[in-house]
Image: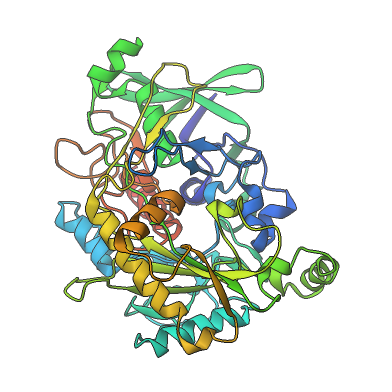
Length: 528
């Protein structure tokens, strides 16, 4: 079959791209998704997001053993479903800091400064509360305040002020720093994903074909030009042709993997695997960056945290409250409260993000205590110095990529997270928590030395699910795409997802990924 545009991956970027490129009825668009439909109720109930980990909706990746994290392989969930990671994430809507995008522009990426990308954020946003020059109000993607925040989340904001930090009710406005409640990608108490916002309203378009459970084998390249791709659907092997462009939106792990399987990457790595080299690009799969989250947890004196929501006898009333009013614990995204701060006074912008949860959250929720109640702060490293890579060890498209984030390979990250953990301890000792705070849970003692805290962080820290950078844009020898997101040396092939970020943004990455897709759609339409 022949299409004008073929998009690989129906995640945060791919769904938006499919919407924009199919708006012209003369454009024939194919959207391929490796996972299935987003019809399971746990996708749409906000508090159920962690139940989607290690499910049919997750690629269920793990890293190679991390030498600086106690040689642990570390879980890396990635959405394998319509909506991609926007269908399994915690729905926190954060764009990043002005300095992030100005930093991209300073690296030679023209058109990616904060002032240049702000209109693209605003274009897809529908913010239900904030109406000003920083926010969009008429887009498809709904951004709302928490419907029913837990009292402990309000106490977290109060504790931040008691410790001398400012309150902030809009992390995406004029200033990012301060303590507040997160705005969320939710609509009427249900998850707003890229699929619900951008795909569902346009499924009827006759020029848009959506194929789920389609695993791409490789991009077809002839004479330095992408001409289509080969994919598996059930037991069928299919090849499709692209008249205009192939757009890779498979994410920071799968996009570089598919480039390498297609012969685009470091020839010294590809030739021994028997892969015909189409373009030598040594930066493919390099520059992997991620946000690492550690933190502090306390047991709660009260039994009314989110931990009790799904335990007998609360489960039926909680479910009834959600079904009838879309409120209560099931409407929570768990990480309700947040903060951005600088752990060193001289920094130009925050290097630490807090995620406050009125519940236990140990190792993605897998190791939560079965009884009791807890709460705590996830201290998150948002400007990591450590860099990793994604590689392949075989030409077999069915094999998972090798993922090595290099967590804590740069000791500056360890020191930053220690400083952030100390501040989290200070916040949790404020009077606002006195009525709730029981014994400390993690770390084991309140008076740990820096060395003991470092050991604790190596044992308990995990990904915050924000891998980026493996197909970075730029002008240097390790750049994979240019500032128009075109793959270097290959015509009619673009990458538009989180992998193109040269440096990671300060905050959750879903919003910035959608902005990249919005800008990419504009550039693609303008070119053709």
